[in-house]
Length: 215
Ligand code: GRF
Image 1 (cartoon, rainbow, N blue to C red):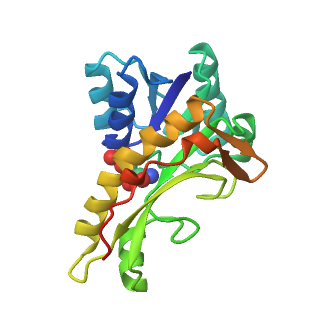
Image 2: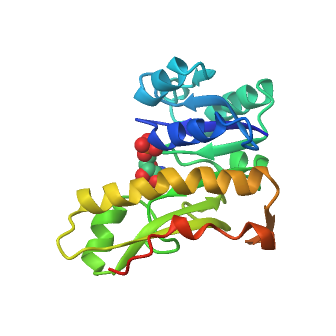
Image 3: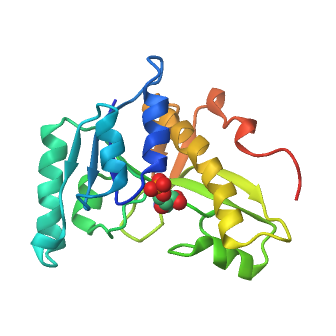
């Protein structure tokens, strides 16, 4: 399966996907890394690994989001992309692109959805006093951070956590979760059925994705 990752910044999740895809037995290939920021550090990191990269800056489109996305979509078609992985792509997508890639676009979000959609998820989790936090890979729908859930990983919240320490613990899980979720989709072990994702019985998420120790 030919996969594109969309990034806007450092691209650590994209690199985790690239590492997984480097295994010849992995069911997907990271064929393209695309960014709306030409100087995104992740773009240079992907290029250094020999992955095709493309910058499609949004600013020249002066607020015409759909025109920006039509350009992106043309790149995806040209590269014969079959699945898009949003990985820290900091632009809201229009319903046009989301519908065009319906059930063929996934996202990673640093919370246990449906809790804490949007930004500053770690600070908000701490303020809410939750004992468990984590990350979610979901199929993209038009509403932000909504859509059928493919996989989740939970991390315990420690009493002395701040947003930085908690975020670092979640990010570690993101780097394990995203390749796992991608392999579920690319192998056909996970399929979208309406607003749910159905897992093949032999493809239950590895228990290693959740730390065994309680908070
Ligand atoms: C990650 O926390 C991801 O969950 C969120 O944006 C961040 C991107 O980080 N969507 P990176 O660019 O993958 O390092």
